[in-house]
Length: 341
Image 1: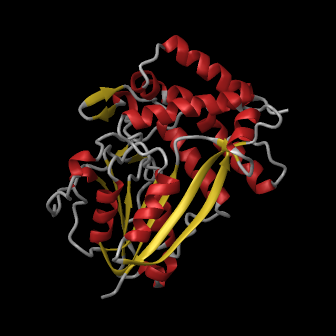
Image 2: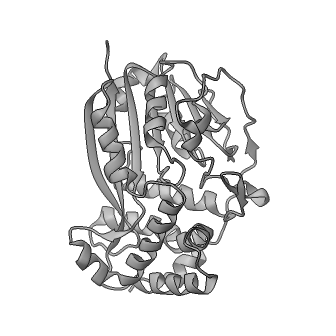
């Protein structure tokens, strides 16, 4: 039987991040069309005791352990991907260990994906950008830098500057995916690679109908209903990973070699498959802390009292570890190449 109390206790220790990479001022192109409809909100905006969240000028207190949660999320994704940091063909556009190549990670969060990619491609110039400054305890490799910037005002690099651009789990950070994807395409070179790893605004049980999923995990399903409502109220597309992104990639005339791969992350270790079980073990901290992380989003976005939200959370928690409630975080990997004209 899965023991949630042990998982909560083991996830309580927080990591201290001491290295601060200051903002870097570089070339900034004009803002993309309709960029004002993109969000200045970032779930990665958590800095020690000065943690914050911003959404259209409104400041919210963030969870102090967001870094721990996001690092665990990264580890779970990596395990689910067979021990790799990607499914897309990065090696094709970053040959010879990335010699004379540039890679951009948008919404880098804790910076862990960019850090590991800089190690895998030691000859590439790797840049991570996020609204919040990235702090890490390690000595960073010479080929890695972090930039604090708001990509809703444009990605601050010239046209065709990068060989590959990657973004991951920005569902609650982007309001206008068309503008964002256009900007990503702008800064990648002809023949370069763009990659979007994205989820949707709900958890579900894989390989069953929506009705059956709701029957098996009623608490998680109801909580997800409110997450979707809150995201919609704030102007986000709760189905970006499954619908908006692949549609925009398919319709864009500058792209070719499009591909989509679906994966799912078990929210707790319910599977007997070793890979899925390990993924669930790594996801459990994220699973247990997510309701509190999303409290202000739902309470404010859905205009409900905290008492009602507490009831939703209690029902959500009742599903975690319950036999048959094999809930997952659905994730889609979308990538394409920019055409060589």
